Length: 501
Image (cartoon, rainbow, N blue to C red):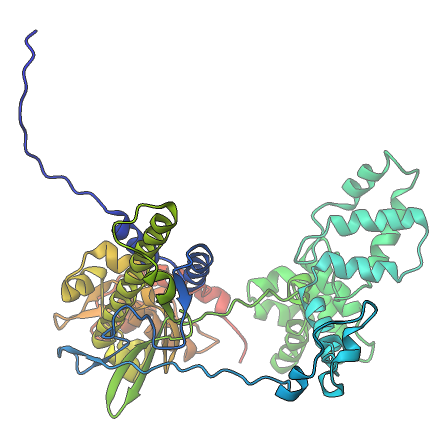
C-alpha cells in the first residue's frame, strides 16, 4: 500500500458562536428572553441597564414600521425614546447630615430615624390586603385541599375519618370517584374492621360537601345529588328528577319527542324542565377550582393611524441595555494580564449579545410588518377576510430562510385592534374557489362558525349541507374537510346540536 499526500479544496458551512447565539435568541419566547437577559446581566459585568434608548450599540435601530399598502414597500420609522425618571428621596438632607458619626452600643435605629421616617406600614396591615391574599389562596387551592378543609370541620370518628380520607384520595379533579365503593371497602379492610355500609354512610356524608355533586360515581349520580339538594318548592323538580333517573340516555341523544310522549309533557313544559337540568354542573370539581390564568405579553403592537397600519415592538419586554463605559475604558491593548483578558472577553461577549438582540428585533419587526401588509383585510374586516399565507411567502418577501421565519413566529404574539394573536395564527393553507382564486382555511372556519351560529336549532346543519352552502358561495371544499374543521373547532355533529326552540 503506497502512501501519498494530496491537497483538496472543499466548502463547508460552519455556524459561528455569534450566529448560534442569534438563532437561539430569535426562537426564545418573551419570558425565556427576559430570563436570558437577566442571566447575561448577572454574569457579565460589562452589561448594564440603561435609561436611554434601547441599546447603545447603534442609534439607527428600527423600532416601528408602517405598512403602506398590500403591495407597497415598508418604511422604517424613527423609534421613540423610553425615558425613565428617578424617584426622589424620602429623607431630608438636613436630617441625614445630623446623624452622629459614632453610635452608642445600645442604640436603636428607631431612635435615630425621624418620626416621619417611621417604618412603612406592612402590606399585611393594609385594609383589604389580607382579604385579597386569602382570596388568591382559596382560588389556587386544589379540590382535595378544599375537601380536606371541610372534613376538618366535620365531627367524625377516627375510623370514619380514615374512610373519608380514602374516598377523597379516590376523587379526581372533576369531582368524580375513580374507584367503586367495593374497591374502597376492599382497600380499607386490611387495616380496619368495618362494614361496607360504613363506607356508604361516609360517602353520603362527603356528598353533602361543597361543591354540590361532589364524590359521585358518574354523571347521573352527580346530577341526582344536585337535584336532591335543591329546595322542594323548586319548579319542575319532580320532572327533572324523573328525566335524570329514567331518560338520561334519551336526553343525551336529543330524543325530545320520546321524552315528551312518555312523560306526557308539552313542549314548553319540557323546555322548562330542561332549563333546570342545564343549570346543574356536570363537573363540579373542575369548575370549583379555576385554572391559573396565563397572561400573554405581546411582542408586537399594531395600530392604525391616519389610515396607515403601524407596527412597533413592545418596549416593555426587553430592558434597555448598554455596555458599561467605565469597565470598557479599562481594557488596554497589548495587555495580557488575567484581569485585562477577563474584561476583554466579557466586552466581546457583551457586544455579541447586543448584536444578537438587535438582530432579533430587526427580524421580528420585518416579519410582523410583512404579515400586517399581507393580512390588511383581516385587520380591516375580520377573520372571514383572512388571506392564505405560508412561511415561504414571508421568507421570499424579506429574503430570509423559512426556518428563520418559523423561529421568528413561534411563541411570538401580536397585539391588534381585534385581539392578541400568535404570529403563527396568520399562516394558513388554502382551498380553491370556482372563480380560480384561493380561500384561506382560517376564513372557511370563521364562515362555518357564522353559518352554525345562525342555524335552526330544530334542524341543525349537517356537514353535507354546510358543504353545499360553501359551494354556493364559490368555495370548492369537500365534506370531509368540513368535518375536519368542525372537529377542530370542537363543534358537535348535527344530531347532538339539536335543541328545542
